[in-house]
Image (cartoon, rainbow, N blue to C red; front, side):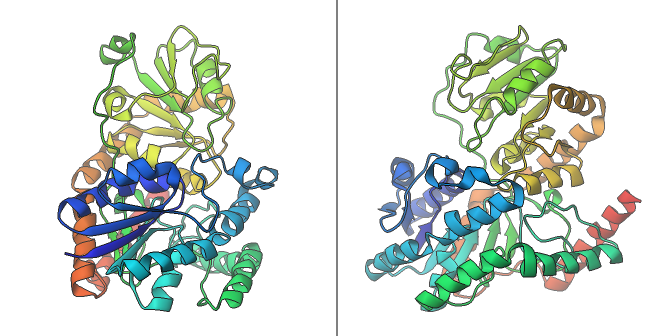
Length: 450
């Protein structure tokens, strides 16, 4: 049996998809130490892993970045993303490294696995010559000649002009847009004698686990062979669920059921839930809104006759009845919807949401409003279009079928076991075959745009 050190950012969405993977690793006999936030101690220990808390840097866990990182709320769009790179992801590296070095003195791990945002993991792997793996928790952001740099929110263009555009954007991203972020890391790295790293998403030379399917991503002809699509890691159904008194309205519905959810980080109900309730108040639909913790009164929401508002409803119970989902574009929520064949209206543009929204547009599984604060008119038009055009549900159902081909947890565990046992990079299908497959997808995409 092998020893695994797992490291995650103190962010709910970075922890949830890794929980069942770690639980399975422990159940089959491996030793796991999980380094993470004390806010999630109980959840981490429920997997059977040994918990080691963040000690040497800021530990948070309520997803309220603006409260924990002074000045963040003053920035929007790319500027806010740059702020996050510097202060949410780069600043903690020194503390993470100190803590993980201490762990390794007592727990000589065979493999170190981090979520994609824990930059301390590649540094640790390089400086100590360790096997390291990445478990991504959002859309695939690795550099490619076929797509624009991650974070710019630019749709792919597979023509020759598009590939030239990507090269120009990559240069601009590196030399101009994110230059100050790179300088910020370089100065800290030089002071600490760390290896030179790009602030672009890092790919482990050994194993990169992507919990999705290629059918949701942009086609690529240059996907590294150590990148594995394992399908979605979906939330586990709660052990018990007491339905609200109106639940039969959902299960017996003869009209479309529309779910609107505000997400787990940006949870202001004024942004998405309020305009949705107003937009659909006179429509022949049933609206279910989940606020992420507040009652309708606490969220200051006026609830029309065709709607219900709850702090939380498990999606595993609700999704089989949903016709369309309105979301702020969080990767986890969108994945759950598509795994159930439910098309989406996406309304976010912060964090990774612009990139998620563009994939929704590209694969035509929903409508991207490109704003976290849509007007009621925008919401109404999007929902009506989604319900009227069957192509959105058909494409979402296709993704549901692609997702169903995978057992994500079993595949992730197998890949990690192979890495620990062979101590060599874990490659997928031959690179040439993968490139040909990606090229065919790209050509299909070009033909579809024509």
